Length: 153
Image 1 (cartoon, rainbow, N blue to C red):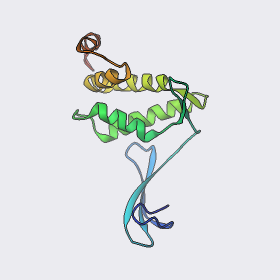
Image 2: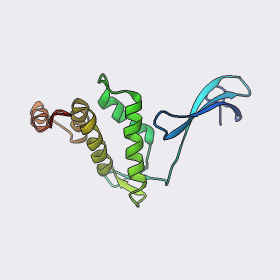
Image 3: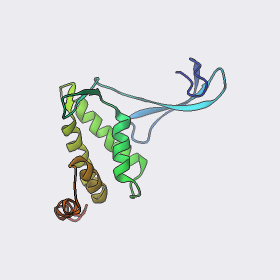
Image 4: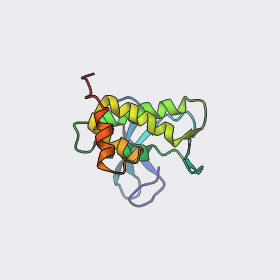
C-alpha cells in the first residue's frame, strides 16, 4: 500500500479489525520509509459497477461520492457516521446484486431516498431537494407536506 505522506510503496500492517458494521476490515498501517501511520479500509466488491448518467455518460461507481452526498444530506442531524456507512454499504450491496454492471444514476438516487426516508425526514427532504432539482420554496413545501415524520406513520 502506497504511503499517502511520502509515496513509498511498502507499508506494514500494525493492526487489523472489522468495522462496526462488519462490512469492511480496518487496517492500521505504518510506512517503512517515513514511519508515518495511516488507516486503510478493505471491502468486499462483488463486481465493478458503472453509473449510467442521464446524459448517457458512463462513470465508474464511486462509493466515496455516495458517502459524501449522504453525509451532506445528514449534516447537523442526529445521524452518526456508522449509520451512514451502514446505509451506503446496504445500497452498494443492492447495486452489486442487481445483476447488471451498469446502473442508472436514477436508481441510485431512488435507493438513497428509500434509505434516508427511514432514517431521518430532514435528511430525506434535503437529499430530495437536490435529486429532484427543487427550483423554488413551493417545491419544498409540496414535497415536505407529503412526508410523514419517521416513526409516526
